Every structure is written in structure tokens, then in C-alpha cells.
Amino acid sequence: MKQFYAFVRKEINHILRDVRTMMILLAIPVIQIILFGFAISTEVRNADIAIYDPSNDAATQRIGELIEVSSYFNVYKYVKTPQEINNLFKRGEVSMVVVFSDQFREKLMHTGKAEIQIIADASDPNNATSLTNYLKGIIGSYQQELMREQKVPYQITSEMKLLYNPQMKGSYNFVPGVLGMILMLICAMMTSIAIVREKEMGTMEVLLVSPMKPLLIIIAKAVPYFLLSCINLTTVLLLSIFVLDVPVAGSLFWLITVSLVFIFVSLSLGLLVSTVTESQMTAMLISGMVFMLPVVLLSGMMFPVENMPFLLQMVSHIIPAKWYISAVKDIMIKGAGFEAISKELAILAGMIVVLLVVSFKKFKSRLE
Image (cartoon, rainbow, N blue to C red; front, side, top):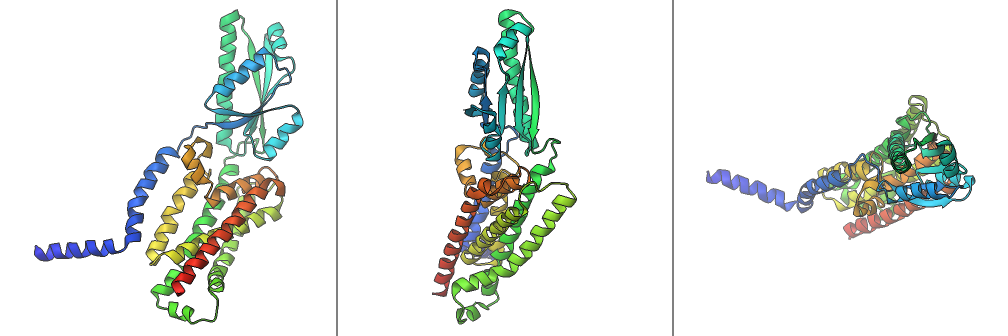
């Protein structure tokens, strides 16, 4: 038994010596329970909506109050002209607009009927369906309130208008998300083992005596994987357009541009992992597990970011896939141009600079 305990102690010491792997293995369950506990929710809350109210009477004000106090909606603004509605959707500032008819209360009191138009962004069919049902419930509660007070069978009808995806196809929503996940995971995973492999194979010394500068070595490591990623991008786009019938409503040039920038971000992230890890297994574990959960859960790919606690919403801002998925939706589904994606492009470009600088510093310290 003493020999058995000695072998057990030896294995424990062997595991404990790899501190980084131990931290990853112990931290992953904590991260998973927090993310799955708080991020996964099919409910839509705090969705930004706008209201167009040409009547501005007691009835429309009361419905507006019910919408404002609801936990499902956040009244972003009251628009003054119909032209503002399209601009709000193009910029992605609201998910829905409520449009009251002229003389809303007067028509309701005299004819017993009035109309409300609900304009929803259907690029995410699940969100559009949920928000529409929530809003109809609020309208129905106001209708019941009137009937209790005046004993008159008032009828408020809702007219639906679905933008960008009137057929409510699910592929319109998941294609941008899957595209972001594929590029992020494959690019990061492929490049994360690039430098670590050199060290494990004993060829790092060749790089140390090479006349190449560290920055050029890092970039040279990324170039082959960049070319492979471009092939993946082309394949996924062709399948999305010709097999899944997801249109490219906007500029193909800007779609490819933002995709290439995102590929650079993913490659840079993989290179950073490669420079700070000691083994290929650790690098693969980080790129495969640590990156996958945030991309799937916090990027808005599957679950609305608005539903999450404030802290997780802040964490989602540092996930490159969130900005890429948002830009792809704007271009492919909404037909937006450079103005709509300029913020996402700037953030992704900034991430490239930061990741490359940190990778260079880490790599240079290894050379020393």
C-alpha cells in the first residue's frame, strides 16, 4: 500500500505543478454554472422600443405608461415623425415601434374600435414573436381595464408589420451567429498551438537565432491560418446564400471586410493564447472551452444580451463575436451600410491592435 500511496502522491504533485491547467480545470465549472444560471433565458426583457403617438390623448398615454412600467420593455424614445422609425431600425437602436392611429381615443369612444400598428425587427424571429406577444398582452389588459370601468366592449386591433424577415425564417438569425462562432473557434484554436508546438518540438531555438523580428515571426505564424479561414468564410457564405436562402441585403464588400477584420481578431486571440501557455493541451483547452462558452452564451448568438445581469452585459462587450454578429446581421439582413457598422469595425480593429501588442510583448519576454 505504501507504494500505491507513493504513486498517488506522485501523480498529485505532477498535476499540481501545472498551475495554469489546474486553474482552468477548477475555474471552468464555476464559469459554467454562472453563465448557464444567468445567461440562458428565453424571455426577452428590457427591450428598447419607440412609440409614435400622433394622438397624444389620455388613452395612448395610459397605454404608454403600461408599456413603460413593464419589465419587458424600455421606452427608448417617442418619435415625432414616421421617417424616424426607419432610421431607428437601420441603426439597430430599437427592436420594436408602437404606432398609434390618429385620434385614437376619439375613435375608441365613438366607434368602440381603434388600431395600433406594431412594427417589429424580425431579424431575430424569436425575439420578435416574444415582444409582440408581450405587447399584445399589455394592450389587452388596457382593453379589459376600459371594459371594467365603462361596461362597453371596446376593441383595440393590432396590425403587425415585420421588417427584414417577414417570413420569420430561423436561418436569418442563426447564420450570423454560427458564422461568428465558427470563425472564432477555428481561428483561435488553430493559432493557439502555433508557438507552443515549436517549444514542445524543440524548434524554438531555431526561432531564437533567426534574423526575423518577433513581430514578423508572430505574423508569419498567422498567415497560413488566415488563408484557411478565408476558405472557411467563403464556404459558409456560399452555403448560407445558396442552400439556406439567407440573402445578403447589404454590401458584399463590407460583409467580407468586417469578416476579414474578425478573422484577424480571432487569429490574434489565438496567438496570444499561444504565447502565454506552456503546452498544446493547455492551449487547446483554453481555445476550445474558455472561448466557446462566452461566444455561445454572451455574444447574443442564442440568448438576448438584454436579459442578462448588468455584469454579464459588460463582459459581453469584450467578446469579439458579439460585435461581429451584430455587424453581419446589419449587413446581411437589414441591408445597412458602412455607417451602421462603423462602431463594430472600430472596436474589432482596436481589439486587433491590443491583442497583437500583448502577444508581441509576451513573445519578446520569452526571447529574453
